[in-house]
Image (cartoon, rainbow, N blue to C red; front, side, top):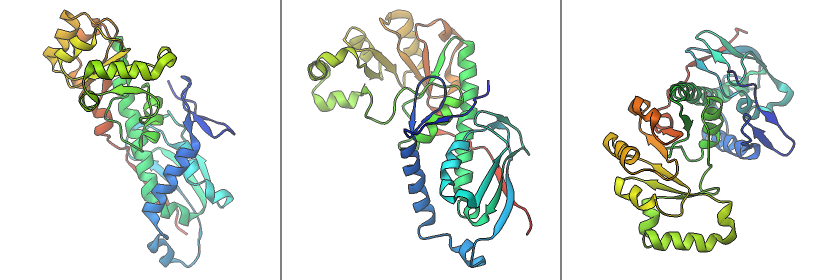
Length: 303
């Protein structure tokens, strides 16, 4: 299924898909401005030396590998300050399957803006499309076993703004952003705050009536930890770093009260028998750690 693009709203949000999740465009602008400030500093020395003023140019950006294209709307934001001085003629939309040699977009106008941002174009298109492609493959495999792909815990800080868009377009579900919109308790939180019982009591006391509207999620790293938290007042247990034997023990012997989220290092770690286990959501950590970028080429037409 091809994704039909985002909807841009005056309120400054991007809505990437039909699940109601929104991305703040102002945050993406801030991220892109920061990336440009690091990449360019006071300017692109080479581009500014080869000609004293910007030249009118045309050309195209071409895919050099197969995959799912994502990044159109992000690149539109990257070049929005170019205004009418640079036109992007899009041949691909976010979510389109693309093939080696296919034109993603043409450009016409201020060629210096393309040259100055060439490395960012490669990185943004490559990363977002690469993640969407791998996500699509993983989501398809899990769906065949009745499971749904969700983000893992290995997401990249800051760049998750872009990764979230690519992941969802690829068919995954992104459930949280940063550290501000969820209660996700790790074993280090428990050690820091004085142990399991003390921590859980403190959280419930602090939440008060809002406890009914906020989910408490706990990261589980051992079978013993699962046994302890399976009976406590928490909503979601994340099984992270468990061995295959541990996973079998949890689902075949310990009777989860609520459906946990199973985190696997690799898609290859998923076993056919997991289809019958009592969980719906599965995270594949390698999707966030080993992104294989889509290859592309920027070609200027001769003057």
